[in-house]
Length: 333
Image (tube, rainbow, N blue to C red; front, side):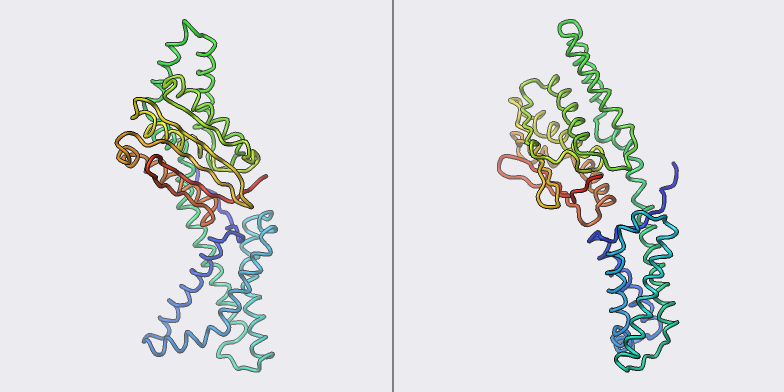
């Protein structure tokens, strides 16, 4: 598999900004502990260094936030140089402000402050690049994972049986089912690294539900509350279909009389909200809790890669239904 490309983090993402602060502070804690072992000396030196380190760090984060549109357009190499330069200049600026503006004597030179800031910035970028490489395989392998865990091994067999049953009596409907099945597997084999329009995901979800409706008949009662959904919003590929498959498998199939499945999507300010609900089977939670963790875990990991801490996936049950909620930032092309 081709190694995942290097990419700068999104410095307007809340999770990225929090990680920058945590990594930078962690490095300072670790380095200062090595330089000054012992609690008393370490704590005194740590607090004394904060007069310069903290303002420079926060200034760097603010500048990176403001420069994010430029980072999104530039190359990775230029971006790395710019990030390190921003950190070094922030450190030099605050060093000059503390020594000349406040008249305080610092134990380090401006050159030393700039060097430390550059090293910290390089370490932060190394962490994000490592994190990107660690999580990217989960997204690049989504084509294989989708075939293994999103569409159950016997789904193709069941779909073909439905087609065979329709060939003699309803050949036109059999042709439609085959087309829907082809669309599904074409999406499963496509590149899973790029975000896609919500309209495309909805089309794929409807193709899946149409196939299952042939097999399950009136037992599958699907409700589409998507009239207010922003069709141009960008979402990870194969987001809706696995959620609907879980609802069908653990809500409709175990219930002899069938069950209701609801997909609701709408925008709220700068967020996109997705709800997938299904009636609980007669034995309640047991069927739901038994086997959908693999799909939800994969979706959660892909959401983390695309949106970091700004994405949420939660599941809960009420007395009569199982609910999966997805919240992601609303993005468009």
